[in-house]
Image 1: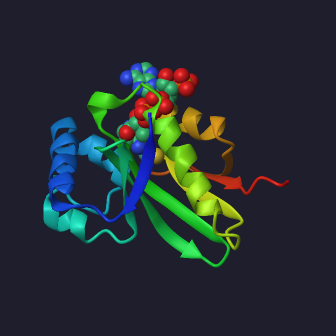
Image 2: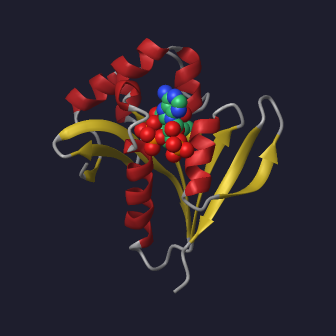
Length: 154
Ligand SMILES: CC(C)(COP(=O)(O)OP(=O)(O)OC[C@H]1O[C@@H](n2cnc3c(N)ncnc32)[C@H](O)[C@@H]1OP(=O)(O)O)[C@@H](O)C(=O)NCCC(=O)NCCS
């Protein structure tokens, strides 16, 4: 495994991403994208996403992740998805860990937050394993958590 990131997404990879996500269905799209973009995805919707990063394992495009909001010393990330055919092999954990390291290379950033649905226990466990803690619980319309990880001291 050799994870790397590239800012932006090439059209061919955006089309792959639309294919995986649309095949999984509307709820899957909402799980990783939130409700703002309508189902199904297409290239025009993907290309509007700012600060999106392509995730590669060696040469192979395996997913995306986004810096959703940057506020002084904190970043909210999201839109994290790994190709559903390649999940459960540790790629998601390695990708998230690599992305956290990449963000914290900027000394100004003190913490990173994200949002995860309660029903998405795989993702929630992954984030906990990497040091995220629940900061806020939002009950409606579906229980979800805002989780935050602070820069490691030392
Ligand atoms: C969340 C996600 C990015 C994790 O990627 P991944 O490549 O599966 O991550 P890992 O292989 O490192 O697995 C993470 C954990 O989920 C578990 N898991 C992953 N896929 C699984 C599956 N199909 N069945 C059972 N467990 C699974 C793994 O066992 C692992 O837990 P562990 O570390 O305690 O063993 C990926 O599942 C995904 O894209 N999900 C859909 C989109 C989404 O929900 N994004 C997050 C929005 S907040």
